[in-house]
Length: 248
Image 1 (tube, rainbow, N blue to C red):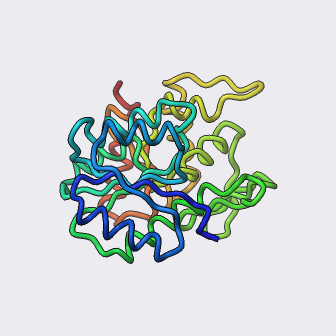
Image 2: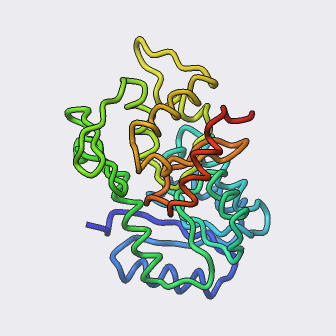
């Protein structure tokens, strides 16, 4: 049921915020809106929502900074963030995702698309006991058996490679820094340094075969999992880009 899922819309265009909240409520969510970045941060801390729809251009505190503060606070760092913005250039998309957004929709947008993205993001936050498989495009991981497949063909991974891939599959489209990935894979008997992450990512790409280029390097930031295999020319460029360790 969606009625228990609380969504905060952070949008300074009041008419757009109002119609977004209206459609969310119509879809069965509990939704409210604020129109300022600083108010948004206070509201999020006072009553942690299940998802945030966040405009990039805000008065008070910019949307990218709101996302960064949400991601650095242990109380809020797992809240899905859907970024809404009129700025559709790739550099702005990367900036939004790098700040911590899970997905990105540019204005003007279809409300049906927003609702579909909201539903997809909320499904990723189901309690672990309700999730047995992570799947993005042709890549799937069975969390019970620790079995990874690409188009149903098994892919042998080391424990560290498996944990890194699970981290990427759990946050498709989000740009994860190497430190983010280290924090997610640390466990008993696992030692991962920043540079060895690059080596493990290269190994994962090789083992994923044709799906390998789905794991993108965002120079100077980290890594991102695309939701589909890129065209052949883009895939070739991606593999060439990642033939050397990522710069700091």
